Image (cartoon, rainbow, N blue to C red; front, side, top):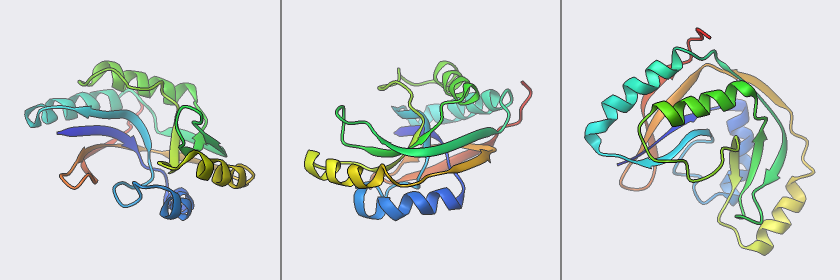
Length: 171
């Protein structure tokens, strides 16, 4: 089974992201807009309870996340994904590190770049056209996220929440 750990932004940010995802993101119907904190990892079903306990323990040491999104960016030329750039605060980076180090699963496939994907799986030409338009879009969101979520992937490729954890903040 595949699992991942994410933070869901507010409905306002999700609505903004979905206004683009409907047209440009092939995973639109598979998962809600999110910030990936620990990427997709393959595990045995029997490991999920242990992973859940590890996440709960990590959350006891972190305050709610303060996030800021101020622009649209792209991973090109590595891949043709366009995203809302979440500023990489020290707090967010430390939470990611703790989840990578303290929760079972393999090494991260990519360097951690906090973001919310709004477009992916496009041809180079389509990417250039869409990104050319979107990068001029004014974006200004600031908010606090007080929960993170353990997701698992269903047979149809969609993702669903296994458990939700409150960031308790005993830093």
